[in-house]
Length: 167
Image (tube, rainbow, N blue to C red):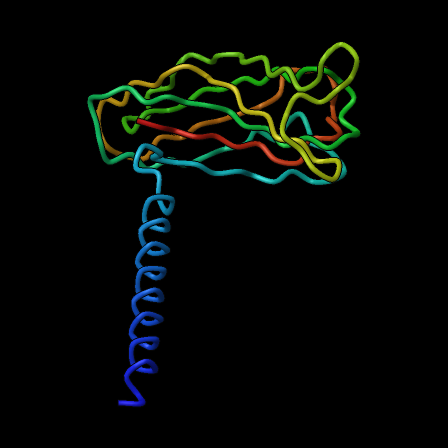
C-alpha cells in the first residue's frame, strides 16, 4: 500500500508525457507541409554581382494539369543594393516547348527614404511579389526564366532569386 501514491504519480506523469507527445506530433503535422505549394526554389547569385547575360532558369515539374497556378517572385537583397526597385522579366516554356510571352514585374525593395520593405535580418532582406497566374495545360517540365532589366552590366546587392508556384 505504500507504493500506491508513487504508482499514481507515475501514471499521471506518463499520461502527461503522452499528451505532450501527441500535441507535438499534431502541431508538426499541421505545419510540416503546404499542400498548395507545387514548387518553391531559390537560386543564389555570386557576391560579385549578377551579370546581365546570366538568365536564371528554374525547371518546374507539374503533375496536375488544366488549372491555373499563382506565380510569385521572391528576392533576397543585401543592404548594398543601389536601387529602390528591381524590374525582372519572366517567361516560361511549356511542356510542349511553346514559349510564353515575357512579362516584366516591378519589385519595390525600398521606400523613398531608402528603408528596405522586405523582411530582414543582418543586412539581408526578402521581398515577394505576385507575378500573376500561369495556366498549365498538361503535366510536364516547365522552364521558367528570370532576368533583370536594369541597364547595369553587373548588378550588385542581389543575393538570391526565387519563384513559387501555388495552386
